[in-house]
Length: 304
Image (tube, rainbow, N blue to C red):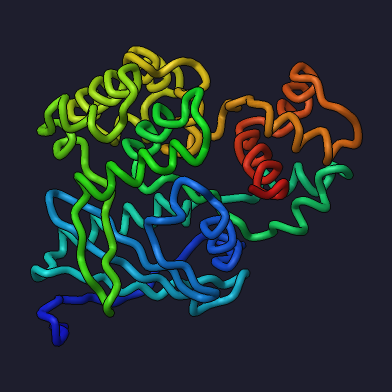
């Protein structure tokens, strides 16, 4: 379909693995600081831009099913015609971003028998993890937020988006897509200095950008956990916590935890007394390979 402004569009449906509650995803996106400026979220829809293979695409999602029989109606917008290959790549990215194919059955079976955690499960039933749109964006955020105030990190990310991201106007709103690694790789050190104004983070961003231009994302998504984590740790500026953050929030690898003060505090509130890190790991081990989902629900229930 071609719109009045010359935009091309394509529509269709996605079928998430049940249970899936899109309203819970929208609630999370509405309170998640790193993404609040990057999208339009309403009670029933999400509209956001993505850059794929040098092209900027805007996607809009609306629910058409139920929590137990979920479906999402998508509309894609571009200033060029769509090809089947491009559409497939975009839909894969959307599905990965919202974890539409995650099977929560094992996690829920364990959680329902955890009397402290069961109320959290009930509150967030149907929530699939919302990741960063790309692992590269997550890695950039990991560096920008290192030993930095949240508002300062948000401003730095927004500056990158506005300076190097590309945009597309849909229905009177301009949507900006976070740059691909290749885009940032072409920028000068001087450009980064003017935006980031922090020598160490500028250096780390440069190393992250180079690494992500050279890696196959299929390896990051499906490679052996320890090998992927080691690859991340070998990037200058990515330590243990940042690598775990990227594994969880950029790649959906739920095998291990990224332990920080907010998670410990959230667990303490749910489990009724101040939480020590050792006890946190003991409880998490009961969740096996779903421990990342357990932590995600704890953090989400605690709010921003």
